[in-house]
Image 1 (cartoon, rainbow, N blue to C red):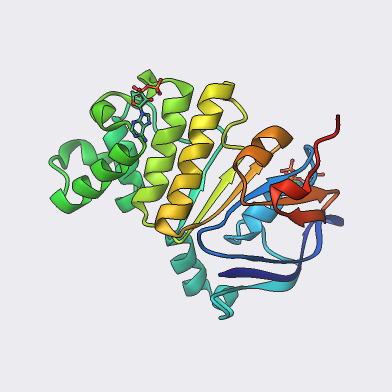
Image 2: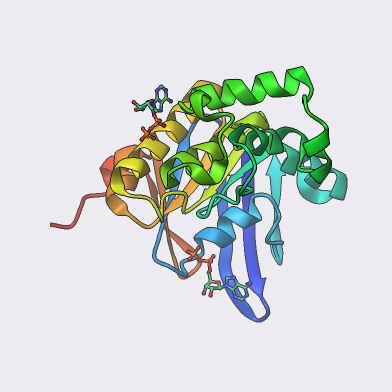
Amino acid sequence: MIQLHKVSVQYGSFTALHSTTLAFVPGQFTVLLGASGAGKSTLLRSLNLLARPSAGHITVDGVGELDHAGRVHEHRKRTGMIFQQHQLIARQSVLANVLLGRIGYHPAWRTMFPLPYGERRIALECLERVGLLHKALERVDCLSGGQQQRVGIARALAQQPRLMLADEPVASLDPASSRQVLAQLKRFCHEDGITIVVSLHQVDLACEYADRIIGLSHGHVVFDSTPDALTPVQ
Ligand code: ADP
Ligand code: ADP
């Protein structure tokens, strides 16, 4: 379990997140909902200390795990990140991109094939889980947007994460691909007991997939409940 205790994040004199206390538990698919500028990215980034709290602290499994640099590194190794624009390496194969989640990218790879068997096997299993095993040896930039985002999910899964953070992972996708991506994230959250936090700005998608919705507005939590408590405005 990862917990924020009265965490505030400031950019200069501007407070993007105000004294926020929240706990995230394994196996719960949490969606952060809010308008642009509400503080969704800041909250996600504070969960792996890409945004440093100016006040408050973060604990992992009750331990002040993120108090030391070494622990922050360990925490990040177990945190899979998924981005709106995939952050995949063009011109490389799908498989090489997934292996990035395991052993990091190095140009020397081009002369390092075959890669370690165990690493390849884990990467291929992750590709199978997102339904893209048949694309493993294709260039990643030849895939559709939805498929590329699923490669991003496979890359995060290959890290065998305990926490997965996805910042607007479906913002650039069509509705069908968006649903496929969210359904897969939710499935892996439940199957693997990963703590997953996803930011969205579409209320309908949040209600359809989230176990828990946290509403943010101007850096404050204004809502924290199950989707059925969020009555759609007619
Ligand atoms: P969201 O993800 O909900 O769109 P953000 O967390 O990105 O919101 O931003 C929250 C607020 O913090 C916004 O007003 C934004 O302009 C501001 N902000 C975000 N990042 C920075 C930064 N690096 N420097 C200054 N202000 C920032
Ligand atoms: P698309 O992304 O357009 O669905 P793909 O080539 O990735 O195309 O998918 C091929 C087939 O695999 C499709 O019928 C798709 O629905 C299915 N598929 C997608 N994801 C999974 C999955 N996680 N497990 C099994 N099959 C999947």
